[in-house]
Length: 131
Image (cartoon, rainbow, N blue to C red):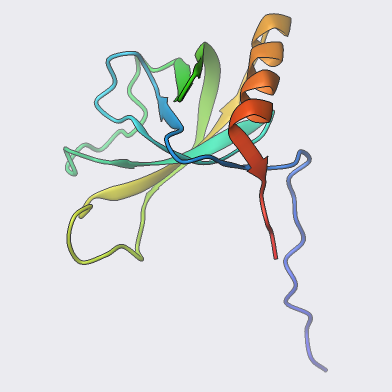
């Protein structure tokens, strides 16, 4: 008997592909800003270059807010929790040797923050093609 290896989507909210030039940083002076890969009302993932690859604790204790920036619009101080942070294995041989991907979950958003995030997603993203 053959097992079905279909992966069931566990996310409860739709993910959107961020447009080129959409960045996330965990503080205004972050040493790890990165390109947003995808985003939803529940969280986002972004890729960044880890300048200090020996740094053990990826989520710095002072990181409690994330900032989003795209051409023409930004959202500030969204509270978050890091869900995953890992090294990208399939990277080109030159350039981003320490490329990492970080997944975050938004936490305790105020009504205004939810409105700002919704507007950001509508203006800077397209529906992600999951095929």
